[in-house]
Image (cartoon, rainbow over all chains, first blue to last red):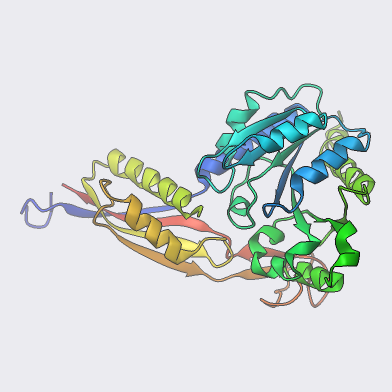
Amino acid sequence: MCEDCGCGDPALVPVEVHESLLAGNDKAARHNREHFTEHGVFAVNLMGSPGSGKTGVMEATARSLPRLRMAAMSGDLATDNDARRLERAGIPARSITTGSACHLDAEMVHQALHHLPLAGLDVLVIENVGNLVCPAVYDLGQHVNVVALAVTEGEDKPLKYPVMFRKADLVLLTKIDLLPHLDVDLAAIEAALAETMPDPVVIPVSARTGQGIERWIAWLEERRERAFVRRAVAAGA
Amino acid sequence: MHEYSIVSALLDRIEAEARSRGASSVASIRVAIGVQAGLDPDLLRSAFELARAGTPCAEATLELRAIAAEWRCRACGGELPLAGPRRCPACGSPGRLVAGDEIVLERLELEVA
C-alpha cells in the first residue's frame, strides 16, 4: 500500500537487477564445459550459413583417417538428415531437432548429452543450426567457435554478420575447389575477416578433394592439446 | 529471431522477481543492449509486445538503452578505432571488445499492493 497517505494505491518499488539475460544459458553452458573438460573431450561449436558445407567438412574429416575419435551433434529445425549423413561417414551423431528455434542453446546440448556417451572421445563437434545471426549469441559450453564460410557466399559476409565472425576462433573457407569457376576475390574475404576478427585464422578446405582437411585436423589437435594437456602440466598433474 | 528467446528469458526473470517481492504488476523495465550484441532492438520490442499478454508485464513500459562499442588492445590496453581491422594501431596486437556486447536487465519498477 502507498505509504504516503494510505490511499490503497499500489506502491512503486524500484529494483536494481543488473543481470545478463543470458545468465541462465551461460550457467548451463558452464555445466556443459565442465562436463566436456572432465571427460577430456574438446568441444567445437561449428556454425555457418545453411549450405556452407558444415556437414561436408565433417564427412571429409572422418574420411581422412582421423587420429581423433570424434562424435557430433547436429541441430536443424526439421529432419535428422545431417546426423544420419555423419553416422554413415562413421561419426557417432545425435540429432537435435529444434522445431522453430533458429539456434542451439546450452540446455538443448545438455539434453542431447544424455544420449551421447563421451567416454573414449577426443572431440565433439556441435553442428549448429545453419544461420549466421542467432547461434552467435548463445554459449553452448564449447572450447572453440568455428565458422564455415563457403567461397560462393560473397566476400562481404563477415561485414554483414560481424557478431558471429568476431567470436570465431577459426574460419573454414569451404568449397575452395570451386574457385576456378568463380569470380571471387580471396583478398577481399581476408580483408573482411580482418575487420571483424581480432586474430583471424583461416583454413581453406574442400570436402570434395580433401584439400586443407589435414591442416584443419592439425589445428584441432593443437587447440585440444592447448586446452587439456598444457593445462594439466601447469597444474602439476 | 532469437529475440523471442531473449524476451522469454526477460519475462521469466521479471516474473520471478515480482513473485519474490509480492508485486502485482510491473510498471517499467529497462534493458541495456550493446550495439554489437547481435540483438535487434525493434525486433526485441515486437517480440515483447507479442509475448507479454497475460504476464505481470502486460502494462509495463520497456526502455531499451543502447551501449556503445569499445575495443581495446589485448596487449597494451590502447583504444582501437571503431572501424577497420581489429588490431591495435599502436602495437599491432589483436583487440578485444570490452563494451557493446551486453544484454542486461538493469532496472524494474514493481507495483506492490
